[in-house]
Length: 442
Image (cartoon, rainbow, N blue to C red; front, side):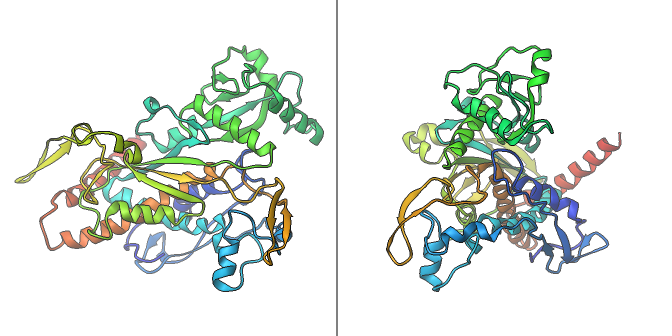
């Protein structure tokens, strides 16, 4: 990555957190491919500080099985970019999809983690992405608010509960057959079954549909599985419904998509360059460049089209004074944090739609590259739903867009006083960081 200002403290630990949240093999809901995704900084820093020169980052692949893709040698996967790459270049990567694979997002996450650290230190900017929906299961609108990243990870974490009489799928005593039997008991249960299936970090027990179930600790403990699922939906009842849906889809060798929401707080005003590089245009460009994304909307997006201006408009309110300049606030945030493509203080809010994964184990009637009839039944280790790994990718892409826009605006502020709050935001960010450090020492 290029363009990172000099003098910022940076080590592998600052980057590794987001890479760990993105990596495969996190739970039974994601691909069983297990990568450590350990990052090494190759250049651009010295004694733990950035130099202002390009930063080189290296993350090796260690768990590879190219043979899993032999079925696709002559048959393009329906819904996948293999065909268009072959059409465009006359050749393609033989395994994994190459640049059309979600594996390429590891570079975005590594670079975006650096941008995210710089944004927080300069302006106190925080970026949080969470599950909004999977399939037809959606978080209740009344439950949505400005979540923290810790809440997204903790409230969306669930430990599995085995059916009565089933052996824990991860204990040494459990054979593969017993583990399969425990999952089959869950999958064959009726939709209205009220057996305990999940427990969250607060110890609350839920059934497969997210309804609370009373269960004594003495009854719960022997049935707790070693397996957990990370749904990243910060509303436990909805997270249970989502986990159930993904497990059912996985068993049927199919895939499912959904949407994620993202909230960026502490974004300085004045970001965005009219007319073609408006802030939401740059965010949309970034999000739609990600594999499997099919939609972007800022604020209420398409839902806002049913409103009238009298209810959709964000009424201005009197804000703080900055020197001789009167700053304004807004009573609502239906615009999603921008006006005319320029940030003005409220949180930037947007949603991204992610389609179902193309590679599925279910047999599909299709054709080979030469047009002859074929049936494709993909083998290998693939996500039934890619959304559990999407939040860190969206967060870091948003960070790179905001960091670029902030650097452009900072260069303008160096010769202008049009946006006085820009400098004050930076000062507030540094003050907040100092206060947090002091509080941590206590």
